[in-house]
Image 1 (cartoon, rainbow, N blue to C red):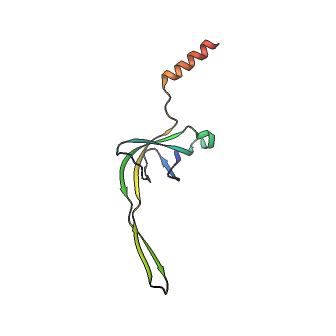
Image 2 (cartoon, rainbow, N blue to C red; image 1 turned 30 degrees about the vertical axis):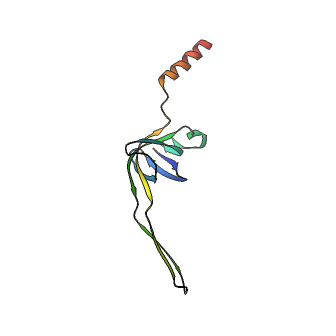
Image 3 (cartoon, one colour; image 1 turned 60 degrees about the vertical axis):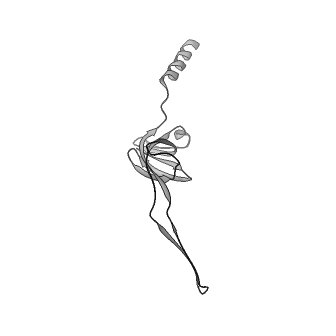
Length: 120
């Protein structure tokens, strides 16, 4: 099973146990974070839209860091204009621990079952 989740206006494909580099999050290493799911796929098929409204991807923050440096070089011909600039994109690396709907408390489920039984 895998899911496509979104963070920072970007979408990422991940399965349980995968390490994914996402946009920088302001959280400590070891913290658990959840992301909303856009699409899930498994042996039963693909689910999107309202079918995955309550599904979340649960991840554990593994590390914070910066990507490799890229060089941005701007040049204008015949004008003697050159501008060299470097950039390192910050990221947060997370490990996907679970894909699915958040756990419902059992006490709440029992109360609703008892309420339905009393109504009958």
